[in-house]
Length: 136
Image 1 (cartoon, rainbow, N blue to C red):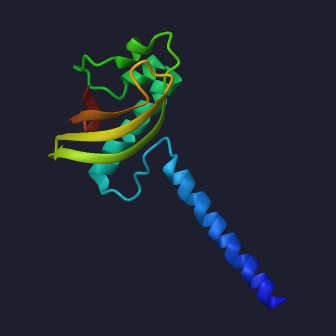
Image 2: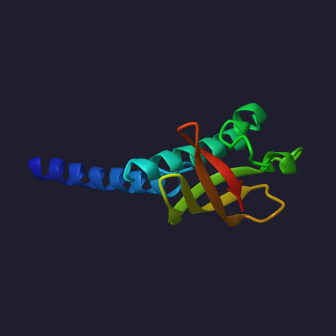
């Protein structure tokens, strides 16, 4: 009886571990918990941009960009139901105390530009907070 119980418990642990891994693989937002502070703050802003983009909330969307940024890619998706459905593989290309450039692999649903792409974000410090200055 104890042996059956132990076998069931071990099997349950394997199932739970597999589910957790699958959830992480399919995560919309980048898990920032393992990054040091500056990278964590930068990725939090990128996550906010994705959230506001998917909501199509232009006012909130504008808050993650610098005042001088001419980027407003949300307008290019007017009337299109494109959603960012997954982000992964952040690669930090350049970093300083006032500017960070990071490339992030993104997957899309209903995009006229394709199902996947790598988006390059350049963020700068503005009024003590990280803001997106450009997206390429």
